[in-house]
Length: 80
Image (tube, helix red, strand yellow):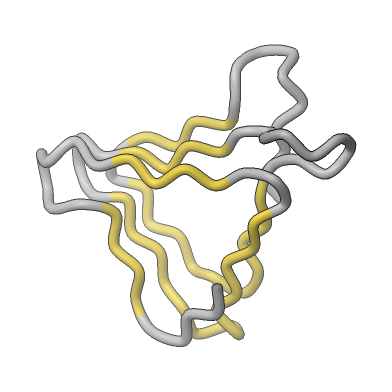
């Protein structure tokens, strides 16, 4: 996904979850923003692809007012 604007995860208190896995990339070209609003979650998981799991946030400014969950212990999820 290439986002040169703003990506918001849920309205405050809505309980929304955005899950990224299998090498997903969000590219903001240095000007994109990702906001995790209160009581919402960005969930990074390994996924099913062997060796290439997790996600990349490239050129995205992140504001975390909620939760950033990078996989369970030992699952191999990576956030780059």
